[in-house]
Length: 138
Image (cartoon, rainbow, N blue to C red; front, side, top):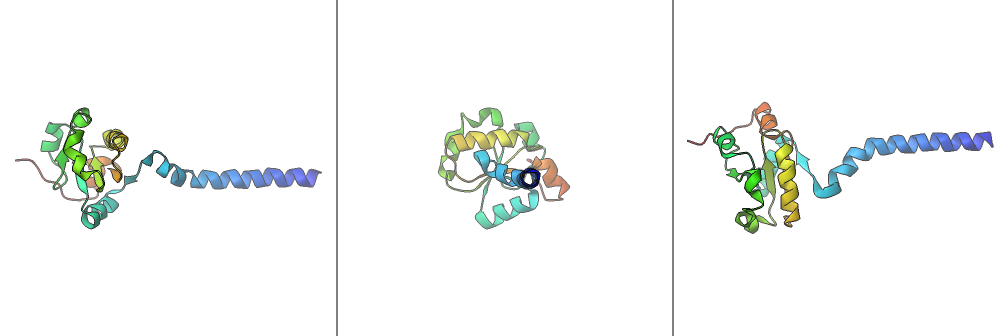
C-alpha cells in the first residue's frame, strides 16, 4: 500500500511540474492575448502587411512612432472603431509605450470581432531597445 501511495505522490508532482512549465504557453491563447516581441512584430509587419495601431496620446505619438503607424488614443478607440472596420480580418499590431494600454486596446478590438490582433510586448520602449527605427511627426 505504501508503494502505491508513493507512486501517486510522485506522479502528481511530475504532472503538476509539467503543467507549471506549460502554463505560460497555455495562457497565451486564453482570451486571445498574443504579445509579440519586437523582432516577431517586424516579421508580422513585413510578411503580413500588418496595420500598426498606436494607442498612445497624440503628444506621445508625435515624439516618435513606428513607421506607418496610425494613431488612435486608447481613450478614443471604442468611439473610433469604425475607422478600423475595413481591417477586421487583417493583422493588426497594437502598440503603446510599455505594453499596458495595448493590452486593453487588443481586448477592445477583439470585443468588436477583430480576428488577428497582436500587442507589441514591451511597447515602444522594447522597440527602441531593440534599436528598431521610429519616425517623428513634423
